[in-house]
Length: 413
Ligand SMILES: [Zn+2]
Ligand SMILES: [Zn+2]
Image (cartoon, rainbow, N blue to C red; front, side, top):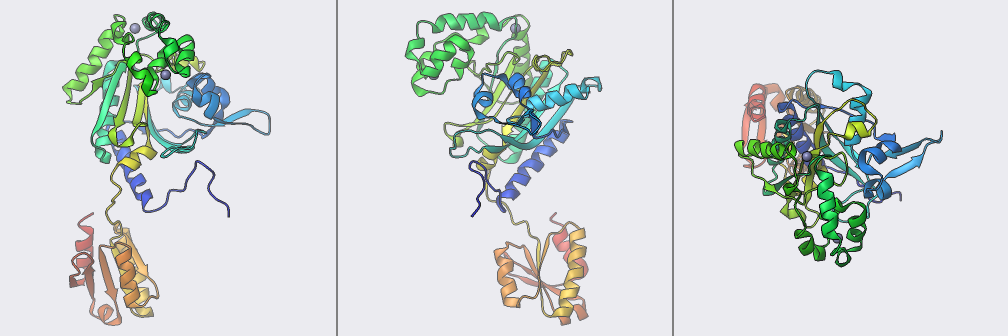
């Protein structure tokens, strides 16, 4: 038997209904904030991510699905989408379009991670990028939007963490301060931290090893090193969030160890997810377009939501989506049912017809399908133009006309 590739999975009904609802909800929120969809290819040149994510990150060095194409070019299955969106932005000169470019995407990403619960090698992200403004107002709007989106999908009890990682003017001094502070304690930290203390001290702050946390907690805070541009920027973001009643926590350890990240970073965590409890991460990346070879300064900010985890945490109990189940008695009634089903479906009512099933069997199936109503059609009903409509929940049965069916069932939608 051939099975799905390790680390990938099939999404089946009824779970797909939750996925669809989450995505529909996201699209509605994006629409309200004037974001528009971008669809970039799943295949990209390997170089894009070496430059756009960082060659020394785990994603690029260990987890990418990279291969040589038949013509010798190096391709990858995209491990994330920000680099692709910025590539498309540069390639199609979207900087020449008026206003801030607000783009969103929903789709699969690929990383060859060690298999663990709730982690997949093909996973889905819902994300967005706002490119062309360095205003803190845009940062606050993006953060407000993600908070709105998570709330509307039904996620409650999440925590929004924000921070500023400074800029190319103030961060290098902080990194030196950090390096100096790490020197006497590095030997007591995990092996990854020992290495990072030399190569990329900022990433020590990311360490999740429990034994390291006490020492890391005593390291200097980047917020004490922000320059005269970064400090007011962060102040503004916080003010705008407070204005709108969005609760947040400032977490100075929330950093991104790549050069083009600057100023605002944010993350959303949710208690139900345990140690791997981040649902969403984002940040400002004013230097990313330049690091991908653009000579146009294109400040931007974006985020991505791990859709697999979000779906896992929102309510799994979806309401029945089947409105009417039609059972029939005889061939003439089946033909009539076909026409009636078409007309109901045109009104957006979901219909299933139990073709050529005995009435008893059909009613059992209606029950199992979670239908709201069952409609029973026989020769008498057709001749009289009056149908029996059974409410599957209350088991009440009513004699209704064709018009009444549309009224009764259509109204709820
Ligand atoms: Zn700065
Ligand atoms: Zn560590």
